[in-house]
Length: 179
Image (cartoon, rainbow, N blue to C red; front, top):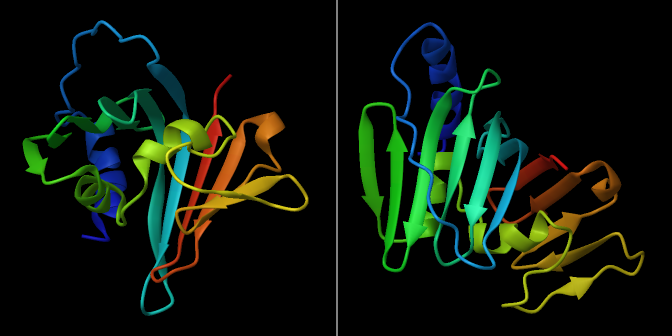
């Protein structure tokens, strides 16, 4: 499971050589309050052997914490995976497969190698704590802690957000959000 992201990125080379990609999704009408964030995403998960696994992809996060989607793509734009969720459902679509999950945590664990709080990402990627749970602003004012993660906003001016979770397995998520 934790090697799924590595597998997806390895599959990118196959995708670039002409294999099938995830079919484009038709444009949807967006609800009021929905957001669309895109850029580059890197996830590193520390393994029990001390070796990290993970990878990089382009991302587009759209919708809201209740209903939305996260798409991961190769540097040339081929879609590697699409995660979508709504009330009572979470789906992962990859080339040649579509799977259902009990919740968004289980889906991101499969997609990225570890559960990522996607609901909070909508706010974190905009440089602010998620209002649904308590947070602690750092004394230096360049970040905050929430949900067991440390969100470093020192690079926010350049669109860079670094989220780290030190609980085992340690996870580092780096996102560069496009303006």
